[in-house]
Image 1 (cartoon, rainbow, N blue to C red):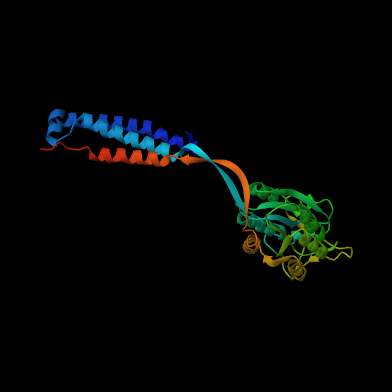
Image 2 (spheres, rainbow, N blue to C red):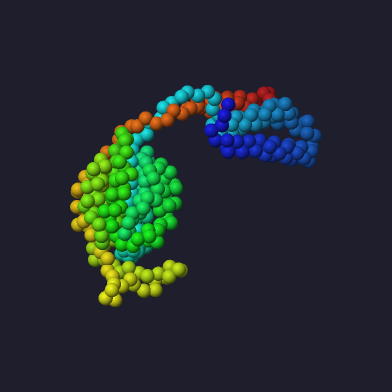
Length: 333
């Protein structure tokens, strides 16, 4: 016998609590009977069935509570070997970590909105293996393909432009690195999800999209930001804005969302483009597109499937309660 939820066995502490409550009630009953007159005469007058019947009813109630608590802990015994299957796809998220992602034409800024879209992706891609790549002037693997969505979410929350050594914005390098990690023998469909403002200062983004297709994957793009654009704030260690990023001519740098490029990359990559605002709706629609090609079942590992025995405990507890209700509360005249 094993317990699937052993923490719930703490409910067995109800038994001593009930015993104490019953003892307290008996003492109170005795004091009341003594105050009203002869206890034996009172019991005969009201047709009390006697202490033995009361004790039996309480014992049945305690037994039912104990069995119910044990059943809630999900007792299991016996098992069979089962080969699991999983559904989904292999997905690599390429996240833009360039300085332009600090622009505040999305809330709280472009990177913050992108992080929320990533969280929605992770919660929508159950059954898929997800990897994470960050890029700016170069690309870096942040996590290999994994089903540890909680760990991936923790990594994403800590990311910033300082996590990539080389400044700039090279979308092509991010896509090429994502394609490299998807080139492996697998039965599962493959996809790359690019989350960026579309600003590409170096490299060939369209060549990166071609690399994704050569890897047998589809490319989905999520654009963050606005067409009118915004300046890039400079912040101090406390997060307070202390100025704006300026170019060589001392004019504030203004960055804009390049939806045209992102639509073209998605078209070349066999996916589609979505505009993201941090609400998660774009990521949810993208996940639908990823899953539409990820309905294959893949053979997994062989595990022990234990047989649940809680119905036995529930049935026994129910029987004890029925017997307890059948014991008369009053003597028949």
